[in-house]
Image 1: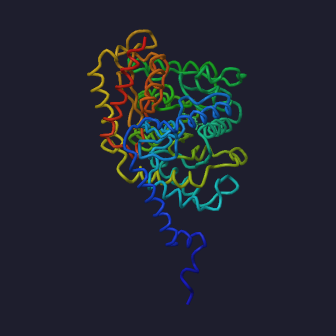
Image 2: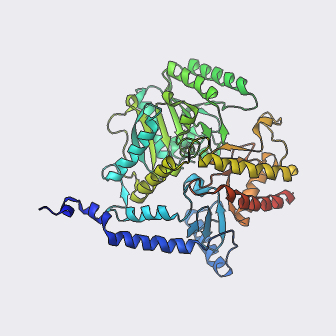
Image 3: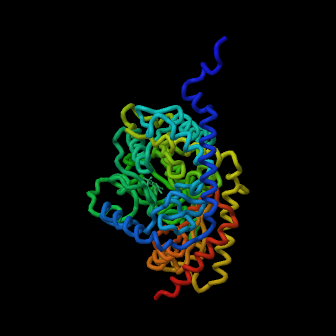
Length: 483
Ligand SMILES: Cc1ncc(COP(=O)(O)O)c(C=O)c1O
């Protein structure tokens, strides 16, 4: 009689080992118990301030410049609350720009991570990957292909590398004969040499030799609605006529991230995509910031635009980044590879996060993410009503007031607030004061600037926006008083 355990691989029997399950349960229970004491905002501890500042100084010495705000995590948190190494506790409404979407010290996440940490390698790569990387890619392909022709998936270790891959795939598809790229004004694409040039940020290009040819398109303008759609289409026609056959792609963020959480409707994107199709200009969608956090896993699903997409990139909340492409865009051997795909823990935690979001009621118009957005809007409306003097008219590019912008907006887990007329100095000051008061958020947009929130949608509860807005109100009162 063969012993049934003899049929298992060593790894499978290790995974089923009750001693390991017990050890993991013990660790997770201890984490739960410790994190339970983290229940709200707390100031730094006197005895930790000095060493905290010394570490920040060390950071600045190492990098040649300090961090944007003095964030040094202690390594423990409780959902949307994070403990810093100085003992303070803050609401984390930005999560490393949208990465930790299941919050800090999530017990289920730790359990998955502990099991993954038993893996034989820390990092996986193109020459050495385990089954978990195939399962991760399969999940992405399954989700994407439900409503698009995307069929293949290349995993990589940063959004910028996913975008580099996408650009190369598009360029190779056009036989190397189409050097130009069409992109939206105010887009952000990452910080490699090519992406710094595609992204529309002057500061990101200082001192770099420019060798990419980018044609910028206006993004959807809610103030001008249909006229904005017609103008964009006319502009696209002009670019294509002026540089026939020279565009390797039109890269689009369907919601601009760094650009200001600007939304565009299907009616804006579809005519542009149709024209690209007619003219054989490949369509590459950058969902690195939007992925996972709107009312569908991919935002293109919500807009019903999947049929037009040739290449798509995603990252951030997935923990491991990816470039997906259709059969027709599958590149030749040698174009896409690299030492690292990501860490074994990242691959497993990323997959767990995506499965949880997919299977546990997060998506759809009544899903948990949409409910969170409503709770955010409710608090924002209350704040705007209580302090109308903090929410003056928001100027438009033209210098005129734009009523269509509103003082709060975004979609799903991408939320923005626009106090102080979106003035740069006030918004940047507010980000710093919020941090001091116990609320970590960031900014986005350029004239107007907005306060940007990427809360941990996987664990945030709608009622937690109330204490978050109490801290915000306190910080805003301080900034309002500054001259
Ligand atoms: C839309 C978009 N594309 C690309 C990137 C670059 O990703 P990474 O910082 O992981 O390289 C970002 C990062 O903020 C982004 O928001």
